[in-house]
Image 1: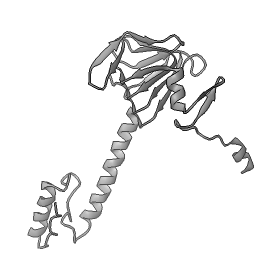
Image 2 (image 1 turned 90 degrees about the vertical axis):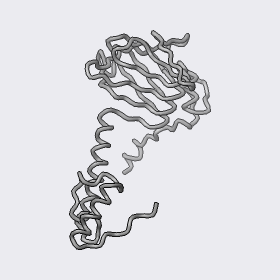
Image 3 (image 1 turned 180 degrees about the horizontal axis):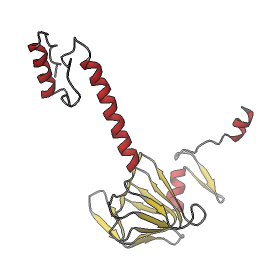
Image 4 (image 1 turned 135 degrees about the horizontal axis):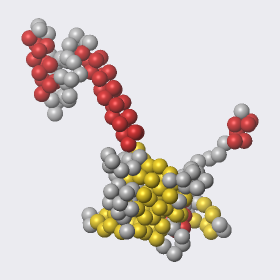
Length: 212
């Protein structure tokens, strides 16, 4: 236990104050935006499309061949899905690494993508060189972070939970869904009413429909 306590490292919050290189910041968020290349809007990287697309609050999109500042932070993407990153790219908005069935994303350099909103990684992404000594990319999101494999796992878990609930209802003789199969019931709409009618024909009195 003592060893575990000695090894305990608190995970910083984006709202935590921090001092880095002798400079104090009111929060980790302020550090990332102050030390990094700050982009306002939603940033999208699409395999097969050269450049980085930034969409502002009005919905207007601009594609830049590369992004850079005078502090050593930079980001560029070519049409083959090759990403070159250095330093911190801090986005006040969402970041999306879009899906493509034929083009993976491959990055070179060491850097971090930070989204104050949500981040969606919907594609394969690999380091070009040796990770993490030659090439390394970090991902930070102030909101949610979803990866392609996670999205499918969440869907599968939701379907499994739904089917379990329906199985319980189908096994209850007092339920209007008694005997119904999961593929019959998709919501408490027409399939629910159909199951009720089937229960009535079998000699059971269906429960009254829920109040709207």
